[in-house]
Amino acid sequence: MKKIYIHGANSSSISFNYIRHFDDDDSVVIDYNCNESSVNEVADDVCKIIKKYDNCALIGHSMGGVIAHSVCMKSPIPSKLITISSPFGGISVTSVLRYLYPTVRMYHDMDPMTIHTPSIASCAWLAIITTGGEAAWMNEPNDGVVTIRSQKFIKPTKMVESNLNHFEILLSDKTIECIDNFLLM
Image 1: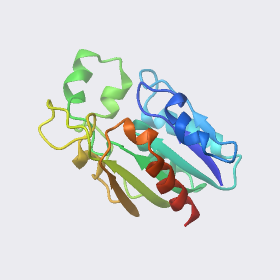
Image 2: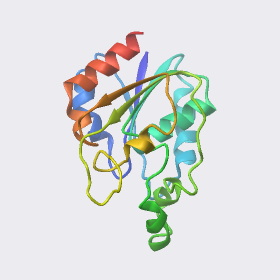
Image 3: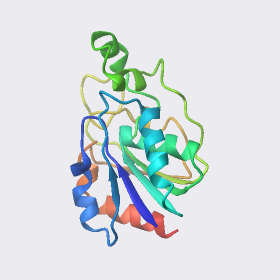
Image 4: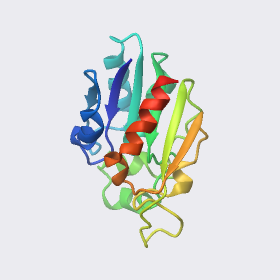
């Protein structure tokens, strides 16, 4: 099964270097610029890329998880979806930021007032929920970037909680084990 990684906003494929170091195949990493492309535009691009594979697993971190979920809603090709720290309920601060920076596409895409409420993915879906962090400026439990409520906005096939923050999760051996075990199911 081909593994396709999609990084979070304002990140790059380097985000997955630790996890990919343990891959025994040639995985694919999708790079995009969240300031220039919408979630739907990136998802459409990923749909074109995965047409060459019979079977694949999408692994997305943060906004990359929202994109990966959108791909699963548009294409029957992915058989597995793994989202890590993904804000399916939006990020509240973007409600203000989208007016201060109207050209930044991510702020519109992640605004809880405008976010497209996704449906349950048709493929097997593991959501890794990060609960460590606690940014003081958020008024509810969070991982330092995304609230736990936003990460749990939709119910996946399987949900695993980790007491790591939004970025530590990508450097965890337990994350790799969790991904590998889910892909073997």
